[in-house]
Length: 66
Image (cartoon, rainbow, N blue to C red; front, side):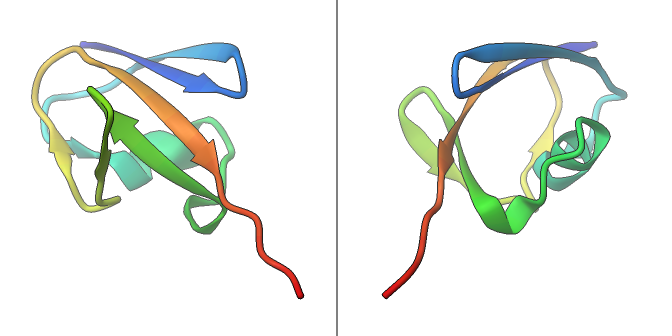
């Protein structure tokens, strides 16, 4: 199945098996899970969430500092 992952306006199309986690999707496009929050339908989803149908995910960049 195909997942769309929007990262700062660039859309990555990723083919994955049902049950793939958000973390595995991030890993497949080379994004460190600790650097972003992933949202679906405007809600933050944990990296452990299993995706079982084609969806469009978006990321929010996490920044930290002092």
